[in-house]
Length: 530
Image (cartoon, rainbow, N blue to C red; front, side, top):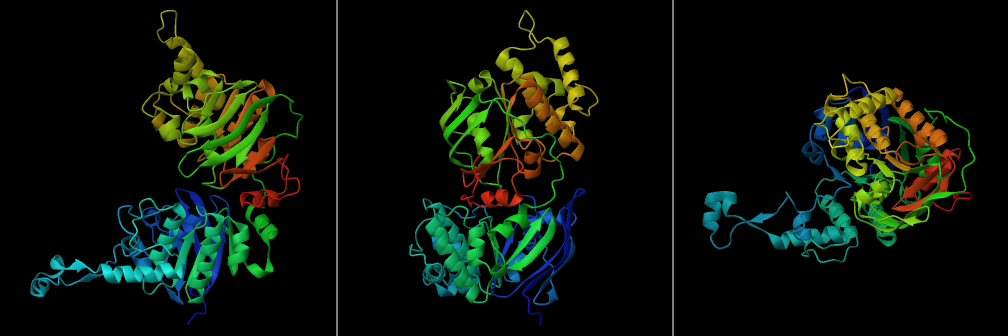
């Protein structure tokens, strides 16, 4: 029998021509805590989806390569197959039923039944229809699972109203209560925990591993990986970088492995002198955006600057622009020059000279059933009464002329300005979003994930345009992106957001190690602020 519990052998996955995993091979040993890390898009989630047999894998053509469990090839076509093999997974999104007790959630779909004591003969004759739940035994089993996690809360407590940290422990308790568990996948389990709760979870993980259960620990917190893991595997751009014993590495080296790739888009300009004029000031910004909460962010942006905002998924970077532009409830202070701007009022923000290209082009950025020209002029017409004639009617000639100008400038591939936006490719839809924002002639432009899902040629065009707007027209730009290379290619400074706060602000030529450490929540860097 293999000394390894699980082996990935040459695992590859392609989504519509996009290679998200390429020949990934490594192993998991019985009873070890194996950390799996990488930037957004590194392939971690796809690999775990393959392991757990998620439908998204099998409805998109499956995968290449093999997985072996205890030396035998395993076929996992659904999560039920994975669970039957002794593989459990705690996802980032909670899967609890608020109206059920902790014990009922732990035993969900594995309820214990007993004969109806009122009439055992009836129970025998009619089977499960006349059985009842054995709450006493379910509570007893739940108590055992909770005790293994050092949770003192009563098992009959309703999940509704529990602190988020407790919910995370209930999710884990549900998995360790299962019989035959061999491998437990924990996807960012400490992301929603307080420091003390995280320490308790790491302790519980060690206890679980001592019982021979292996753990795949997905986390961006390098200090926790060093403290808890036996080995660490690092993915980058869908490929395996390295697997190392944690005792033979450190946070600096891991950060460099994680982020230290060659930048595919070279920096398009040298460091430049910026104006001393502060154009935008943000103080104590808090935003209630689900999964992207902002917890007290402060920074200043100078006139004509391209200010980058980066960080890992779910850390709050997307919440900043969305909060300022009124997409989600926000608190704090935002001033443009000396003028205080009104939070939670999108129209007044647009009136004040701010414009926004949303990361969600389908739901927020576009009117997909409308023509390209309508999308381009819509906001400017409604906010600034542009494209109206003397009779307050739409000036079709002016709209057509402007739309054609934007189509040419941004190289929007279409049949005409009258083509429905929903029929364009993703990259061309993104260009329409940019065209609409620019049509408002903003003083300050927020762009979130401006190059997501578009080809390299379209990416370069948009990045070059942003640089031109800043350099030649003096526009102030705040660019939020998951692509660190792109931020470094055009931004003057880059703020890294971690756990809803500014971990640090770095120049674009800072070392990949510094960026990686800030993304992982390690803030005490020399020169970490600029």
